[in-house]
Length: 302
Length: 235
Image (cartoon, rainbow over all chains, first blue to last red; front, side, top):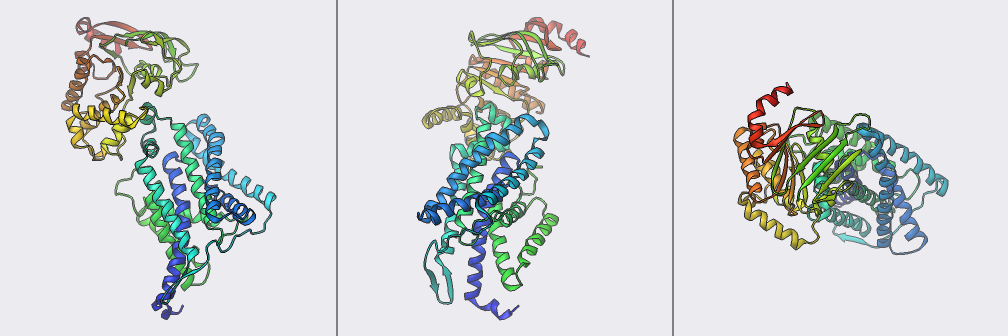
């Protein structure tokens, strides 16, 4: 490791930008995971495959049909919202109704099954080839020694905008309030006439849409292929743990942090170390602050 | 809006009915209290009335019309609101958000706004604390918030399951004062409570359940005389 590089502002900014781009992807993924876990209690192990489908949607809309990238990203979000709603209605809701108390464990196993099915379907339909779309946005931002491509800036900007939109939706909209109410006390929400089954369906749809949007947005760095969702999902699970289970804003901040830590560690150490760093971070946090970096002192959810 | 339950058989599984042909009437504008030992089916009765459990047999009528198969939304539209047992506020939402959610089924924001103003006028303490998280209110205030939230949609019939459970005696009195206030405003109220003395004190009519049937019924005065004897039967 070249210590002199630590003093070069151009390189530091470059690596920071890389970190924020990674962080943006983790944040969108982790926000969806955390939303689904916080409200429904479901640990969605197939979240990475929703990312993968989003990447394919992006590839077909921008790479094959030649439409502009914002339409690809929007299409990825919309398609995955629909897909998420479908999955919730047909599979998860069915389990919840039938399996009684242990249904969460069943749901967990179900999402692992969905992972296997979706990966193999993608393999049959599209093969192992990587299908990417490069150069969504041309040009480079130059300021003294700092050089950052506009594409990276675009990815971070979209992630921030989506994060803010999600936050204000949950905080201020009627549906957002009903979602929070359902997560805090589903029984009470039901007596007030809130259709909690519908709330669960929307929640899963929104979580899936975030994964799809993330897959579409990151296509230039993560070209679509059947197992592209593996690292994003592992990392976003780490962010959900770091941020505190079910704490959406905690997960987003943890994601940005993890992205930056990874970028610096893969730059200053040899490649592959960033994955070790993630694991170390998760283990340390689990030992020191088991309920996450941003939890208040009392444990809110067992 | 009277509530009539007749010959109702219901339970969690078909094999084990909790209610065995229960008959009960909550008269319009009156307070009807249901007492009984644990497992007598008091809470089950309220759940069945509110549509959470489907009766195997029998009828449940509100204002002369069957309400079997209604969703909670339909119940609220018909003017029936239900306070479930235990805490039911949303602790990490503000007092105002809690109240707004009480008006979830209301069609328009302006309608909800009006209902909110009406509640604030009636409960000035809740207005003062409207921006605070409901979770930091005292136990008594939380219960008052729950009752206030129940009246957002302007129901006429209230089903209250254990309104005083887990509260210290002073707060129990406060909650019962509030219920008396609702009684004066001619709500039709059906209460299930462990606190037999307190609930009977505001009752117009009392039912004592045992094993899913009504064993005794009568006015408050009739019950006051026989209470000791009835409670002894439970032990």
